[in-house]
Image (cartoon, rainbow, N blue to C red; front, side, top):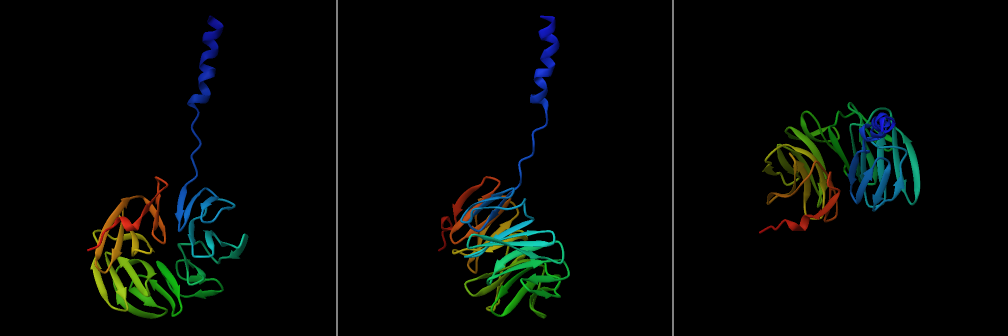
Length: 235
């Protein structure tokens, strides 16, 4: 009995060992990535957890320090970056990466200190300390953090949502932390709630710490569940 008692603490050691932390989950427009494993609309094993992940209709983009990966047509392509990404947008057929004092847009390095940016046929729309810009032109002063394209409008979001070019303004309950365009409107993470933002107003649809949207589907973290923006009823 004494020998069994002496061995008992050793048998408990594995149960007391610290659990290995699970890799972070990132949503992207079409699914989720846990660590480097991407599931959903794109299915690919990345070399490790990216800093940022985004996708358009045909390509998945993953941003790492000094490297942008593009997955398209079953091939993974590496593009060198001249810095550490601050944001990533897949828009206008390009991966747009903020680098602090410049913006990389797949071959172009533009000298804009952007907090967020989106590529369009009219060039780069971006938000920074002064407000909303198109290339070097200030379009609207304001404390904006996010910018997206929705139904041919450029929408800048911070404490308010500003719709360009019609000039419509909409106050938000809190500053937007993240925003993407969906089929129902602009899907914005405001506090710990996901809102659908349109010129008619801003309506909550779910709670989350992170979100991505593809068409009408919302991909929510940490629950890793989906919701539909059509759950929001407009008058």
